[in-house]
Image (cartoon, rainbow, N blue to C red; front, top):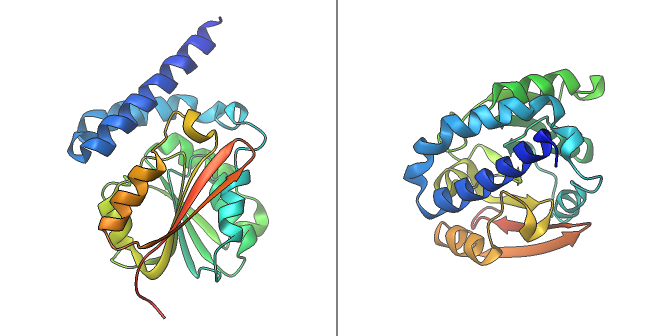
Length: 213
């Protein structure tokens, strides 16, 4: 096994540990924040090469199931922006914001933004546990292989809006939360409706917030 492979395996184990700890106790995110930022800054230049060809197949399945196009969408943990681009292509009238903790990832996302999407997608560095956006700002919040901070998700999604959580490798994804846990946490915060999807190697959960028209 090469040194790069050893580092990537260690990174996956760290991502799984971080996910498990932070989902169980979000206050401990402050312990892992800087290490996580450093980890993803380091791999930003090769991040897309590390993905499987079907990494976003299940995300696309979840987007296709939305009952109406979102006007405002947020992609958390956007990485190099591929999920944000997928949202913008499927819903060309939407305003899409992609955020990531790692400035290296955001730089890559900005560099890779196709010319036809420049007017529809923007990227910024942000911590998903403390978003600057106002309450009920988004019709859709997507998370692809991303730790969910449930209180912030519930805060920024408008009534009747959706959260889409996708995991490109299913339960084998380094950053993964079991669907039972997702349903429980989101259900406590006003999300009563769920649908799950599978495509390629991935799984996804779509949750609808109560209220709206």
